[in-house]
Each structure stands twice: as structure tokens, then as C-alpha cells.
Image 1: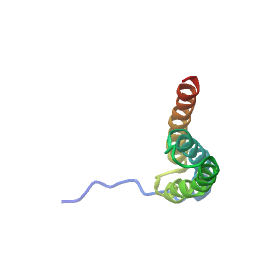
Image 2 (image 1 turned 45 degrees about the horizontal axis):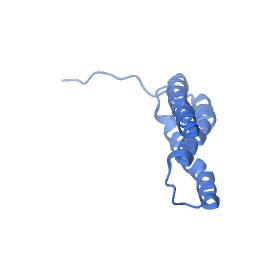
Image 3 (image 1 turned 90 degrees about the vertical axis):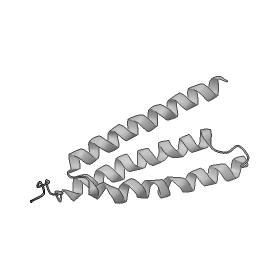
Image 4 (image 1 turned 180 degrees about the vertical axis):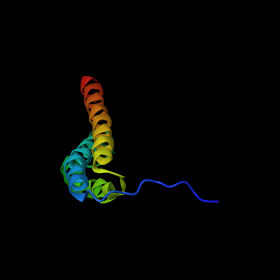
Length: 101
């Protein structure tokens, strides 16, 4: 029995790198913002700002390093773009809900 043939991962690394660099950064900033609004309140303001600042590159490394697992650069842009829309929408909704209360 032979297994079905899957399309190979294409080596369009420039498109994938740009997707991980640009959209990965915006995703990291949005997730850091969500942590700032929803994170633990016991952290003092100065320490929480510092923690959020240092979270951005740590979170950014995840999409930047896993973007090469997408089959094409277009898929990387589409998936990371959709993830950015979700994270940005969650951040906007959180800010509106918490700022109004």
C-alpha cells in the first residue's frame, strides 16, 4: 500500500520570513497588550510594563520560527493575518469592556 502523496513544502523563505517578521511582531504586540489588560493585577505598574515589554520578543519568536512549517508563503500570510485579526479584535473588545467599567 502506498500513502497518498502530499505537496512538498516550498522554499519561498523570503515570503515566509517577511510574514513571520511583520505579522509575527504585530501578533506579539497584540498578545502582550491582552496580557497587560487581563494579566494578574498583583504586579506593580512599573514591573508589569517591564514584563510586557520583555514578553513581545519571546512571543514574536514563536511565529518567526514556526512560519517555515507552512507549505507556502501565501498560507503563512493568510494564517498569521487571520490570527492577527482575531488577536486585534480581542484586544479591542477587552479594552472597550474594561475601559467602560
